Length: 121
Image (cartoon, rainbow, N blue to C red):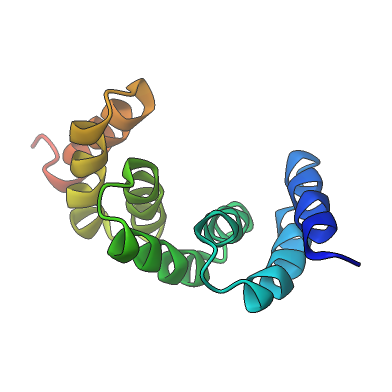
């Protein structure tokens, strides 16, 4: 099967709520297209959705290293770190994403992280 067909199949699996299956397909696509940032992001999202957080983190760190202005990659990296109870480490990524793009979800994530890092006594 062609890579594009596999990519489309993986996206469909994500829409159907089957991120682990999507990740398995995207791993093969990523192996064939290691420089493709869109595939890397989709793979990271599949890992995130299937709670394979260490794998998601690795791909997201690669994405933000390649393009530090990618606010979405920073946001998802922050969320990935937050899900690993590494909120203090997540906060700079969440704040950066919020500063780059005024998106309600980004602001909410920052507020949640700030509250978690500095809880009211």
